[in-house]
Length: 445
Image (tube, rainbow, N blue to C red; front, top):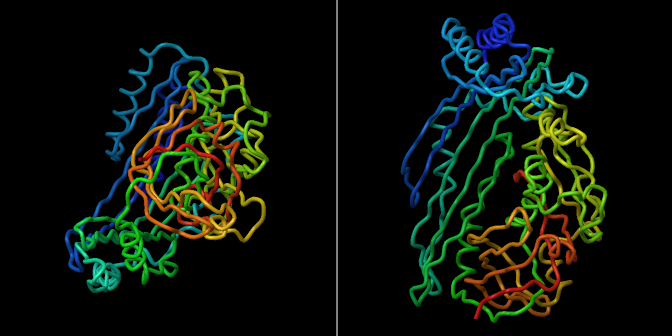
């Protein structure tokens, strides 16, 4: 964790920058430790340990702005660094839109970094023996069968600690502490006719006691075996169910289009959409960044602005843009936070729907369990994604499919939203459940 000497140096830098002629400055101090163990077929393949420490400084000098970073945290080195940085900032073009956020918008309650309950005090007690035990005991334990043979299993255990302090010349002081413990398995199998498929499963938790890894490798194996024999289905328009593990792929373009930089640069398909109903009433997305004990929850953004919970999209209506101080000053839009911190796509039409229940309601269509490349045009919303998954009929899975392509437009797609499940995973940064859409264009055979 960041120690008292590093905190002293951070405060000194802010004061020294003011002494040297900066009207304002913001400083972010980051420190992290991570450990990783990769295994291959039940044996240790490689081990890594990394430490990272850096300081970023944003300077506001005579109407000009520049950002700098360093990892040399010795007092004299920092003073020399700041003197040079201020000199360089003075040669930049003036930009009156560059300002610190008003103090009343900034977070006041993140004083020790532990407020969100995301730091596990057992992290400093972890040693290599304990890490090896977790990594090795959960490797795949399965035999070949007449239907498949196991080609390989690659697994990974990792843990990390992250500490971030933000302060500025107007009195901002915010801290965020978080730990993460993760385990993942990727299994490759081969069928009787020589076809190979791979699939994965993972779990991530802020607290080690909640990292239940016993069935991760088994689930990865089950998913890989299920894809054996996959081939393209006939082209056509199908109901599409998207599994919760990959559904965030479809929400991300919407959130990006609500971002200030995209809006300011006319590179958003949601320009001038605030307050308008552009999507199905089934679509509601909320910011839920204050849930204690859940990874990704944050009390402040990179500017130190206090995060807030509330609607982003509600019943299909756009409720919020993500506008930092700079973009607000450039465009005249109301400032908010920089990005969605922890968006939740709300269940609809009722709670209790998981992927299986949604398939049952849709009757027939294609379940998408993986995306293989593709993109979404940020200016128009037109998309094209490679997908794989399963054909289903009468609510039952019939056959695996692969090498399929879905095309369309994001605004039109989310007007066709039929169902949103209540099966989100807490270990994802975007809380998106299984989703169902009507009449999506698939290209295959």
